[in-house]
Each structure stands twice: as structure tokens, then as C-alpha cells.
Length: 336
Image 1 (cartoon, rainbow, N blue to C red):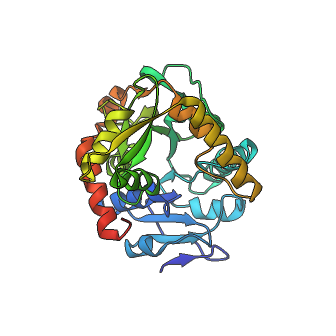
Image 2 (cartoon, rainbow, N blue to C red):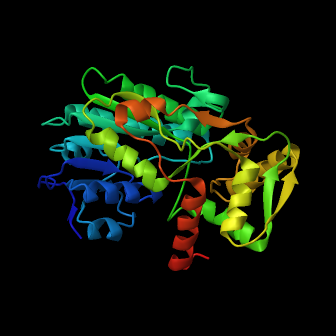
């Protein structure tokens, strides 16, 4: 494993520095970058699993977003910084803000102070920063985040966009991401395999998703496409109601899973109990009251035309194929 502690030695040369590369999306991004021939350096905490990144040939820098001097050294020499690291759920909104805003601000300050300075910063945001919508949201629409996570990601967006006069800044907003390695979708596949899938009762709730390998391709385009600037929504143009997504999950699992309509009030109550129980144990949970708000939102749609026109990117993986590849990966990995 190539690791650098950043004490007195400079970090290995790199075209790209990636934070959050040991995560689900990050590993796919690192794979896409190395496939393009980029020299990749990744920022990882001492507790992160980095064997797969080292196997790709990435240089692993052991440091955190709270270590200003090490951050500056990690950034130095990279042409592009890709910021994927984020907290998706926490016990409090302050914790989300401390990581998603504070960590982003620290990385930006290190980027601006680095010598030589990178020319571009790519910030991975979320459709949660824009908020839910029944019509395709564009980058000119006023953001209306529904959750603490969405508000923290929007705050991070605003911080990096303020630096657009000093850096080339690209912000990517992604909806729910699925694909090989995703632990969240695994839960639904297990339910589908059991023959039951819960669906919120009420309206159709149309949504767009994005396959992780498509998202990784978009990140590569954002990193190296000369004209890329500003905010882009990265999602499949395919729009499906949640019930149709669940039916596809069942078909992929080889089961005609029965959809169980769950009242909104029961979803909210279950989320509140889940949050209270895990909070009492000193932990956070993905299924919390904010997650219930997302599940019960009227829809999650976005306009991907700017990405197609300016990044030359369009998500090309149909949902049925993406789910099939994900299912097969779970089986081969022994997750199912």
C-alpha cells in the first residue's frame, strides 16, 4: 500500500486528489479515474479501508479534513480536487453541518492556500440540496431543501461557489445512487427476495435515480471537461414512480413481490422510534425522521439537460439493467 503520513515528505504526484474515495461512490470514481489514466491520490482517515484503492495504484494519504497543514500538503500538486466525503446521517443537524459544511470549508481553504494551487474543485452535492419537486428542477430554481442533510449540502455548495473567482468550481447534484457495493439498496433486495416490499401509500411520487458507474463517469467529465462550470444535476432521465421501482426490484430478484402500502403516519412514527432508539444508544440511523420526509415527498425530479450539453454526459444505464447488474454483484460478493 502506498501511504503518506505527510510529516516532512511531500505527497506523491497526482493529477487528482479525491476525498471520500473509500466509500461506495468514491471507489467507483477512483476506478473511473484510473481507467482514464489519471494519477490518483486519495485522502483517507486512519480507520478507512483502502486496500482496494491501493490495488488500483492510488496513493493513499492518511489525514482528516480537520488537519489544516496536512490538508494543504495533500492538495499541493494536484490539478483537480474532487470532494466526495460527506456525512449522510447523524444524531444532530449540528453534526451534519460540522462535517458537510465545516469539512468542505477546510478543504477549500487548503486548496486555495496550496502551492501550486489546483485549478479545479469538483464538489459532490445531492438533489437533497435542491429539494423535492414534481417538475424537473433546473440549476436556476431556488433550492428548498427538506432535511438537515440537504441544508448542510446546500451550505457546502454555496461555500465552494463563492470561490469561483479563484478556482474552476463544478457542483454535481445526484439523487439516490445505487449499484454494486451499495448497502442501502441491499435491504430492499432482501425484502424483494422475501416477497414483500413496503411502498408509501398515497400519490405516485415519481423519482429519478442514478447508477453509480454513470455517476462516476459524470465526475470524470466534471474533472476534465474544460468548459465545465457551476451546478449540474446528474441523474438518469428515466422517471419512475416508487411503486414501479419496487416492482422492478422484485422482478430482478425473481419474485413477484407483493407491494405493501404503508400509511404516511406509520412511516413517520416508525422513523421517530428508530431515531429515538439509536440516539439513546449513542448512534445515528439512516431511517430517521428526515428519511421519512424524503420518502413521503411528492417527487424527486431534476433537469439533466445542462449536464448533457456542457459535460457531454447522459446517464446511459436503464434502471432494469442497473438493478440486474447490482443484484448479480450482491450474489457474487456473497451479500445475498
